Structure formats: structure tokens, C-alpha cells
Amino acid sequence: MFGAFLLSIAAGYASPFARPFIEQTIEKVLLDKVDFEETQALTLSFIVCMLAASILIVLFQVNAAPFLVIFGGAIGFFGKQIAGVVMTQVNK
Image (tube, rainbow, N blue to C red; front, side, top):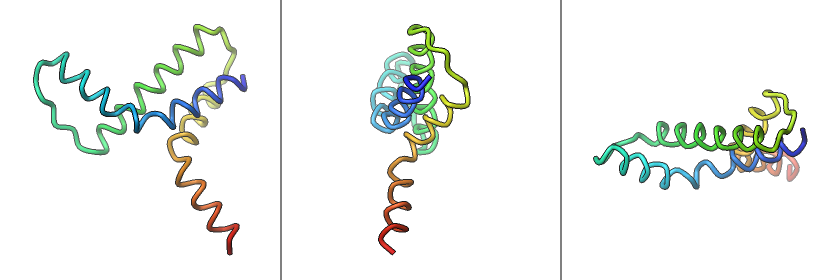
């Protein structure tokens, strides 16, 4: 269960970095340039990364609660902002 949580954190963290690859893949499949807004591209990237993490969790036959997967993905995605807030509060 903890492994699924860590995998979902990694997927959430990797989603902004996967965005260009996902956009290129969509353009290759559709054979046309698709103009995504920033929020749309990030949301699509997050969904694809979390789907990949979920598939890996199933393949590894890990018993994981869906809440942990979603919570881990959110922590990974917003990790830099969360760390910034914590560091600001600690340094006060």
C-alpha cells in the first residue's frame, strides 16, 4: 500500500514534465497541431500520469486504497507549493 502511495506521488510530480511528450503524441495521432491552454495541458498530463500509475499498481498487484492514490498524486503535483508554504512558516 505504501508503494502505491509513493508511485502516485512520483506520477503527480512527473506530470508537468510529461506534458510536452503527451502533447507531441496527441499531435502525431491527430496529424494536426492542437492548441491547448496551459491548464488543459496540465490536467491532461496529470490524468495520463495517474492512469499510468494506476495501471502499474494493478500490474504489481498492490492492494491500494483509491484515496491514497489520489492523495499521493495531489501531493506530488503540488509538492513544490506545499514545501514553499511549510518553509515559509518554519522560517517565521
